[in-house]
Length: 263
Image (spheres, rainbow, N blue to C red):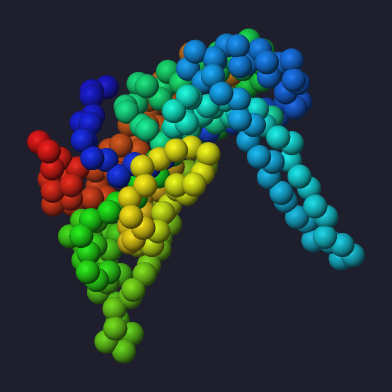
């Protein structure tokens, strides 16, 4: 499959794997203790994920629905976590090293889940990379030095001779079964909150270009069992697809002056 180049200064601030499966009952306290035991060497800290609040508006009322707290285990440096939801396993890190490391974390999570309270089958695999591209810019048009013209072409448009100050876009490639989704745009601040549970480097707030890449796969026809043999190659394919796609999104100037500036 080849070895992608590892950049000394990547703009990646969060990598997420979401492995969806059939919905299972809420994981019991005894099963949570067993999960922690299996993962304690790498993920010794138990920090349950906060429940999500959903509101449904009816003709007569607003119905509040709070999802159950999901067990989550974190690394000691608070830069990586594994969350077990009733319908998914989620692996996250703000300190991405390489594809093989994240893959090993996913394997650990699947093995622990199946030993303790197994799910029946795979519904979807998503590999998401959120990038905050930061580079020297004085005007929005300057992003064309660093980001592919395919994404920054809006700067050629004007209203009353004034170019756009901000723009955002969404592009989908592939179909419902397999493909990639890109969300992009020039924004301000942070795409990933530095005050979140996962610790991350905190550059000064300011303009950045968002490159949010979600590479995904879902089975066609029969639902395969949730085991590593059915996941490993799919993860490699999805992660490599996202990596190769990223290469199209930045200019050679950004690659040489930012990503590889110490080489």
